[in-house]
Length: 236
Image 1 (spheres, rainbow, N blue to C red):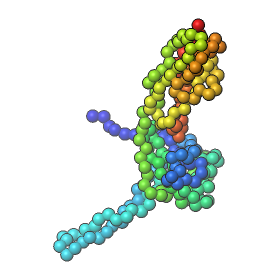
Image 2 (image 1 turned 120 degrees about the horizontal axis):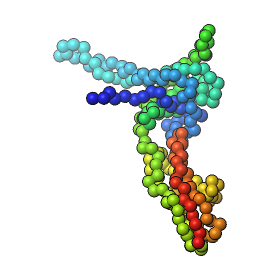
Image 3 (image 1 turned 90 degrees about the vertical axis):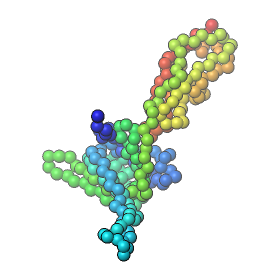
Image 4 (image 1 turned 135 degrees about the horizontal axis):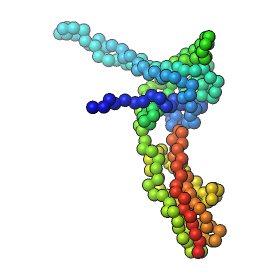
């Protein structure tokens, strides 16, 4: 029986570029902290004890009460870039930012937090280090891994069209994060006005002959783009 685990190397740690709320965190623009952070450690808030001991109890009895707020510690290299600057701004301005921690599998967590403390340290024979202590606002929400973005319908290698008839090319995608955006190209140049899964020109002309591709991009925080096969269109 094989062990089960989540790999930690290549974990992504993201912070929203601006203060966020529960209503805005999903649509927020995120900055990447990954290349400055060495370790992220989550600690769930300890729950208070509620004493329910009665005269018939044979020992003290307690049940869980309200939990303290959960905390996350981020530690790594000090660096001046927009992502770490956002952490320091959150501390200076007592504002709440949105965070995402995404493991290589695609699973992870998203949450709102304020920065309650940050430190940096400089010593001999090393680099400047930094730590950030986050206090969560509410519980972290799981992020479930999504299937990779793939084309379920691709372009054929060739297509022949009679001049004056419709030129139609279609792709279909699945996986990734919807909605998708589509960019059709002819000979490597974007075709203006063609932004759907189906390329359609009602009446083709000789100049429409060429090599067509379609780029499909999903809506993930770090968008993924895939490119269709090339289709050589001949106008007869």
